[in-house]
Amino acid sequence: MSFDPNEISPKALRSFQESDAEINIWEGSVSSSKTFISILRWLKEIQNGPQDGPLAMIGKTLDALKRNVISPMQELIGPDCQYYPGRREIELWGRTIFTYGANDERAEGKIRGSTLAGAYVDELTLIPESFWNMLQSRLRVKGAKAFATTNPDGPGHWVKKTWLDRKHELNLKSWAFRLEDNQWLVKNNPGYIESLKKRYVGLWYKRFIDGLWCLAEGAVHDYFDELLHTILRPPPALSYFVAMDYGTVNPTAILLFGENLSTKPRSWVEREFYWDPAVTNRQKTDAEISRDLREFLGPIEPEAIYVDPSAASLKLQLQKDGFYQIQDADNSVLDGIRTVSMLTVSGEHAICRAARQTIEDKSNYVWNTKLAVKTGEDKPIKQHDHTQDAERYGLHTRYGQYRIDYNLLARN
Ligand SMILES: Nc1ncnc2c1ncn2[C@@H]1O[C@H](COP(=O)(O)OP(=O)(O)OP(=O)(O)O)[C@@H](O)[C@H]1O
Ligand SMILES: [Mg+2]
Image 1 (tube, rainbow, N blue to C red):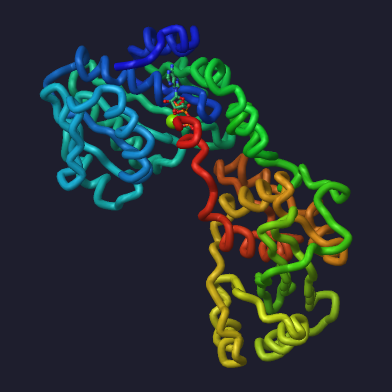
Image 2 (image 1 turned 90 degrees about the vertical axis):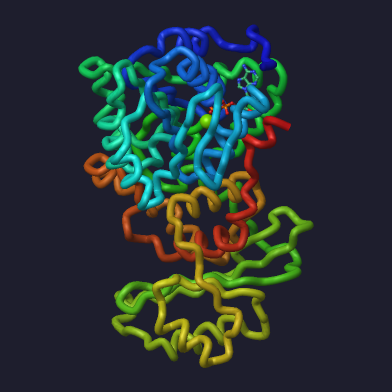
């Protein structure tokens, strides 16, 4: 094992020594060494904890578990740690560790039958509550403990409300980590910490950088500043794409995006089409919207037209009318909002001032705080959201998958 004990923060060291409760949770900022120190603690448990029974390691998916925890574990201890993906088992120092992806329907059934001597959970807030509860009932070997790491979510999330906030009633210990707890990063790569801070905005900055379990409240794009994030005239476009949010009773928003990877911004909303049946007192048919799109585009041939995946009838109409570039938009709401936020704040994306509705909606598009308090779920309120949905469809579907894995960068 190679690491420098001077690069372990006092809090991290304390968490390693104190973590003898039934449940031990490391929570807080990204890249704050939660996984690192909890792996060391888990290895100690494998050696010195209860021996008579199998162990379990759980991630959101098996791929995520492998990437986030199993690979770093193998890096730390070398060939003693053998992972058999086919059997979904790890062999280490004569012990068997079962591995589970918690969003796999069969996993809960499998864990139901076993008695465990210990468990390690990666990214706890992303695990279904039912799975975690099931896991607690399986830790039946005397002295069996659970170890988990997580980034913060909202204060209404079950991990916070049912477990962390009740730690004094439960046999539970937790430690709140911040970026400075990763002394290895502070000493060897402070520039990386600065680049991390630039990458998160709004709600995500508070949760992932400040490490707070904060409520989603106020404007979703609260960082948006017309002076900084809009442009008067677009750069020369090398290609175009379109994104549509479609409604019959609700408004329809169509955005034309320009793209040029060698300019800044490299993508921009060039023009918008907005039709609100409530204002005009008239609904439009699919055929009319298809004609509107043709007229809106004029001579422009977009490379792709991303459409709300639920708009089945409109898609058929558009195809019939010769729009062969139709693609289903990626409708992951939170990930999509994050993509829009990151690209906007970094200056990679902007909105032309002519797109008035898109700009105005920025300040009226707000989080559903009541829902977040009640259920722990973060969602925007469904109003003033049509241009915002269209922008999210366009940016997240086109660029979302290229998001860089900043943890991997830190390691290299
Ligand atoms: N004491 C240390 N010595 C060497 N490397 C370290 C140390 N602490 C942390 N690291 C490295 O810093 C990086 C970030 O740490 P880690 O993955 O543990 O953070 P995390 O809090 O789990 O972050 P996330 O919330 O993103 O999962 C990793 O590459 C990890 O190996
Ligand atoms: Mg981690």
